[in-house]
Image (cartoon, rainbow, N blue to C red):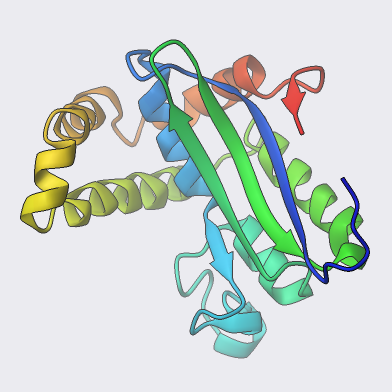
Length: 188
């Protein structure tokens, strides 16, 4: 749906993902962390991850997609998502952008998503896995989140610890990308 009166477009690229009980659900969570998130309103702003300005490689542990979106200013915000249901799931990237940036944004999202099939560094996997572990741990800070997620999140943490060591992670990204991210299967 196109509405020229609305200054920002909400944009998503989604693929059928894994169900909650599927062993691939944890790997997709790591891939979600690899794609990351970014917001124009966050502290790093446009220069988050800019190696020239800051002088360090990936200084804020931002994903390559977040760096590309931030440096090029092609979105107001973006975030990867992985939602698991009983029988299926959704994996993808959601973004908010000005209408004239949608082509560049769509290209960046698809480029970085499909790149998971052929170019994944061990350092990126370790960063994403550690971010996921931290996120799961911090989400349980308080009585309500603990009660809400006591079964689901704790089970994920145990599966994450037992399933993915840093030496083996690099091999499942291309397999899962080929399985879940196929050009004939996007849900837009």
